[in-house]
Image (cartoon, rainbow, N blue to C red; front, side):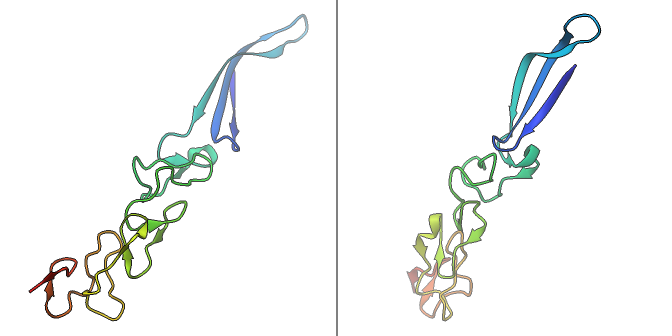
Amino acid sequence: MGGGRWEPRRGRLMRWWGCHGGGEGGGRWEPRRAELSECQTGRYGNQCKQSCSATCGGDNSCDRINGACIQGCDPGYLGTTCGIQCPTGKYGLNCSESCSPNCRGADNACNHEDGTCTNGCEDGYRGDRCDTGR
């Protein structure tokens, strides 16, 4: 016989096996062996039913209880679960890069991941990031 219990505060499943023992007229449960099953990489939460954010950096691992990305975020994303895109005008790892001032448009918008100018280049500039003069 065996049993199990989900431990939400630890993000793991405790399983056990044992046998009945005791004297005449009944027995009792005596645990003999225990096994802990933690969430696999990329999973978290109650019984590991939730997936880590696809924008978690590295191996896509996250905290097995709350889903916070362990290795930071992919370029273009922020937040503990990497669910926030870089604000307009910023891109890259930790949103630390600024879009080129040569991107066309009032807000110099660019792709939040790689910095490619969204609306093309101002006159006289070319390249994905409008960083080359003509």
